[in-house]
Length: 80
Image 1 (cartoon, rainbow, N blue to C red):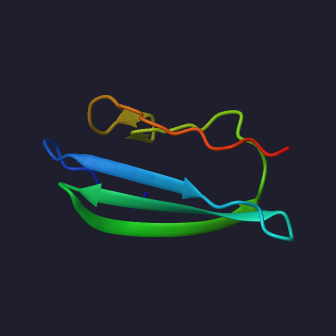
Image 2 (cartoon, rainbow, N blue to C red):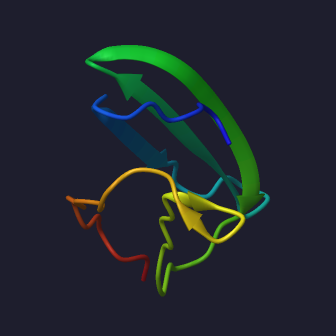
């Protein structure tokens, strides 16, 4: 978990994924904004592949932390 949730606080999570490099690796960068201010950033290297789905959870140990989740996304170019 990058941030502990607080009731009544807006959280925006932005994730971006780099193109594959020569070793077929990519970097995923996740930024968490609380009330418009960046609070946490984490970058993760992983094998580059086409996403079939991305799961987003707002719970820990099976309990919802705060309300629902709204998702917006852009679809990038598909590798040929």
